[in-house]
Image (tube, rainbow, N blue to C red; front, top):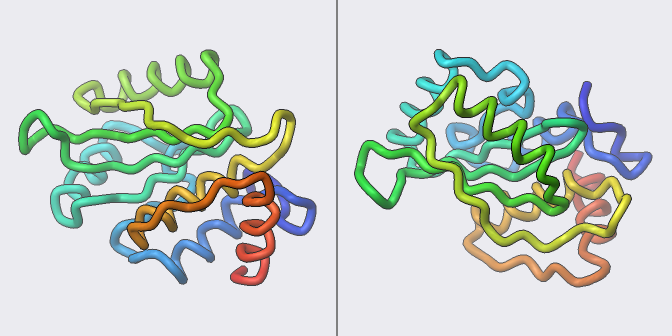
Length: 161
């Protein structure tokens, strides 16, 4: 299990997988352990999934941190795949590790950093912010990232789990 326990204010991969499977289109979400086991073969499967379904919600767990990834067809040509990254607590060390890993297993993937509201410093809210990105994208709405957004998301996700 990665992340933590929602009852303690953290979000675990198991809890997130259950919630995403219940509330997001099943064919457009990948399990939250995908990044941990990502190799060339899995990258090719993800690429095919994007071509079939358009957008794929990709929960990224790296260095004890959740990052929202949206896999989409690229804007440059029809064969290109783009990973839009929404990181609520960006770190050069995490970004470098992420880029190195993708460069090894999926060198053609185009990484694009997108704006993400910042979580409170030293909080464990990255899973909540990741979930807000996914649900906002799925519902085609802008999530209000006010100072109490994490508290509201925590309550909603806990109730949904």
